[in-house]
Image (cartoon, rainbow, N blue to C red; front, side, top):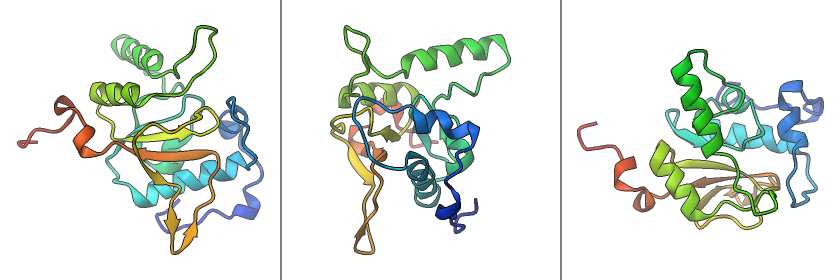
Length: 178
């Protein structure tokens, strides 16, 4: 999709196989929404409103973020590299970026501290949060859904968070010479 091209929402009801996992994997917080429409909308918003070179922390159960948003992500289960060294790094990222779980193995909320620690390790500044898995948002800046032209963008399934500059650890910030 081009930067100004809009998705024909009325024809977007047929969910492609590549998007079924993100649409069907709903967390413990029931959300009454069309998750596919919400997925397309948040990705389009990201494509149109965030830096092209931004790095993203994305939900585990998706595989089309790069297609729709046109942005890099820390790790995606679908993007398995083909050389041994890279497979090991990819596996460590998959394990490290998996949603936190409680003692019973149930997925629990990401904390602000956990996301800041991962941001320091991998250098991302943006988080795409699946609201069905997250009861309370971390204490980070929510930049989507927002008010646009006096109207609230209705996206019950996903939220975009930005890690403010003052919270980015020194080792994750680019040096002045870069």
